[in-house]
Image (tube, rainbow, N blue to C red):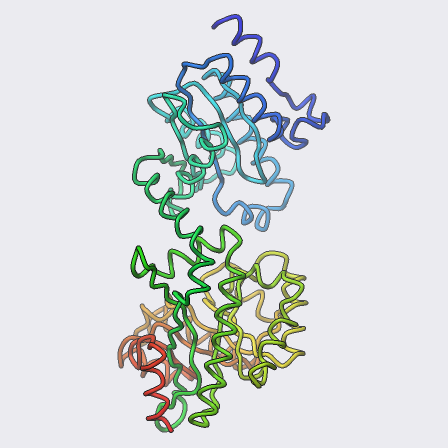
Length: 443
């Protein structure tokens, strides 16, 4: 080891003993993020021609450890991870920090293999937690020619980390590659074009009908408003790509408000033209919930187009209810007091559904498509579905099943007492023109 490297490591090697210092993480004793990046810059100055690895380590769904075993045990797990990354950093001539709650950064001399890190973390956590189910994701950006800045290296390591499978129950690592770089550029171009897309009406509304199935003949009772993007350069951009992208980058608020306003405008037009008075549902993101102007904006928009709040149903995903529950409940109650109907979307996709039902203010449940796919007469999926329907009935909640694709599913849901269904069995999402034709027929 060179003399300069020894001096560097001595200068920036933290310990729990000194964790009281403001430049160290108080729980783990690792470097704070500011000192970490300062140290990384110093590292580059000492080794300008040496390849480096930017490494991001994340424990997927760490909040479940706190919920299941308590925060004290969760802190023990974080400290164990911190010890692993610090040890690995020391052994490979680098530094480490706790960047955020369950996210750790390492900056080390370039390596050809990274099993030293996955093996060490797995061994320690399996012993501590007494389970082989260790959900560690690791993203690595090797920079052999120093072509990126330190921050860019870690941005790309984060992208590699996020691309690792969330379903693996062990430590796994992913290395940033050319495909990820192309994806990064594509995402950047999409983010940069959102204002033009909104101003030029590149986003189009589509409408998927919901049918009441507890009457003699299935009847269209409402419709969900969905969004499509016809990009002038890239063509059709899939919503399951651009919606999470906008959510992650703080742009979903602009898109949601565009959808709400265009929906209100279209509802007003159809009511004036055809006298049709069915409700429409729109999505409300977790970011929208924490917007102080949410309720006033919705009320102003609906008032402008003479729409009653009860006719605009608000779909909030189940996962939105799992963070800052008190604030979510407060806002949803205020929405209901203002006259809006609130539906929990993707019910059953998260982890706390049954516990939440008795405390959350709701008007309807939308069953996640995963509930519907596997149902058959008297199988476990069907028994669980019937149980949910019974609970919903006791709580006076309407139940809507989405993703219904065939007559078998339809009949099972109808006989079990499901109120409404949505899916390709009755209709795919329709363009404005095609949905208008359906409205004419319904009239």
